[in-house]
Length: 114
Image (cartoon, rainbow, N blue to C red; front, top):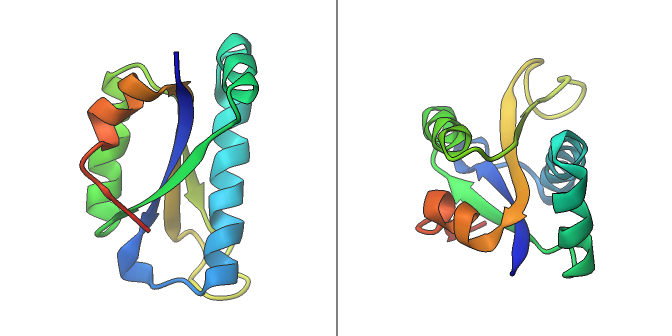
């Protein structure tokens, strides 16, 4: 079985590359810590694949969050502290998984890479 983790990033924020990398890292770590230990172990053994995908805005991010949770996937919503680029409390991205690639693709399979 294949495993992966997906991070959804809001395209409307137009985050600088460094800021986006930090937010994606927060989402990856937080989602991993919330996930089932066995799934994390299997994901790590399979290479710990991570895919960064783009959503249009906060509304679309929440739509995918709900869909992921409806499929039983673990999610991690990231709110920025607001020390640099965006206002405090701005929701920047969403981590999903790790879990089976097939399960995650049913939710995010039509999104484009960042």
